[in-house]
Amino acid sequence: MGIGNGCGRAVLLLTSLALAPPMVRAQPTSGKGQPAQGAQVQSLLETNVKTEWEAFKNKDKKAYSDLLAEDFLAVEDDNQGQRNKNAATAEIDHSVINSYNLFALKILPLESNAALVTYELTMLFPPKAAVRFKRVLVSEVWLKREGQWKMRYYQETRVR
Image (tube, rainbow, N blue to C red; front, side):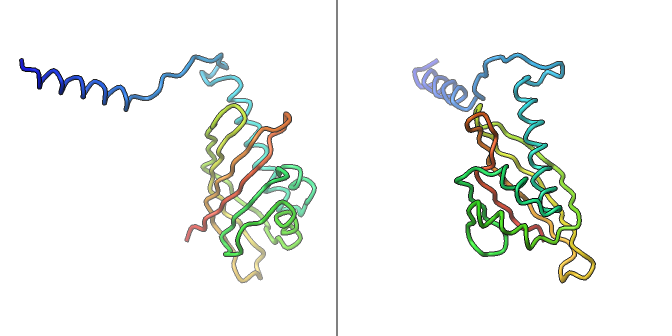
């Protein structure tokens, strides 16, 4: 065994360690093996996303606005650029969503006070609307500020 083989093994070992998944500290779990606090956050954010779309369907500007951070920004698939909280809330007046189907909802905790929420949404519009259905992939960033989870960023991409 020459010195070259030893160096090769050392490089392989260091590479393996660098690529290995990070070790995670154990957390208290709920009965389902999921971190107890994570399950509560997941449930809360799922409820918030449903409340968001119910607010649009029911034209409830207050319920929608209450979910948004003051520095909220949204980018939709309509090529109109970013919207702030006021502009996004004002869109409810023009909403014609009859119903919606939300699926493939996933929540990725980024840290204890931040999460990325992704899902697919199909919106159904009135029978006489020029477009009857619209499917979008959605990404939202939610932040916990002053004890409240608020949506900070919304991005949608149309699925054709």
